[in-house]
Length: 121
Image (cartoon, rainbow, N blue to C red; front, side):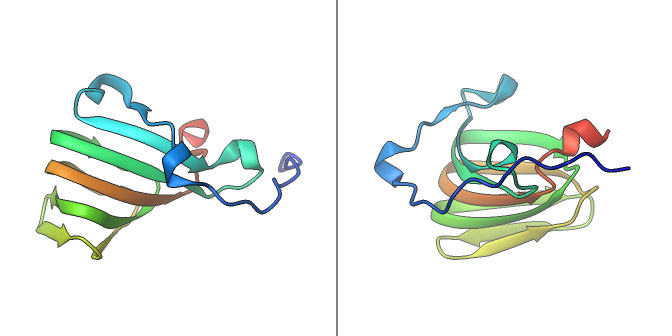
């Protein structure tokens, strides 16, 4: 039986100038994240902004992810391919993909589903 969901937050504008970028886990020197929406908003969709600096971050994603490059160049290396995107390009990544995120300097927008992937492990 599913748990009742929390009420959804109202529609809103999130100003880039007010985005609060914070270090991301052990990669804080390489990745700074500003969450825009997620579980606290009563949604299973997570979205936010990421600044990458001299980044090489290995990961196996546990969620479907869409990444849009706002600034810079961003590369994802998977077991089977190397995907490089420039500003205004996007990369789709299905759950279960083993990868390395790489960039010398990039600003990204990401959307993930489900945002509560860690709770489902």
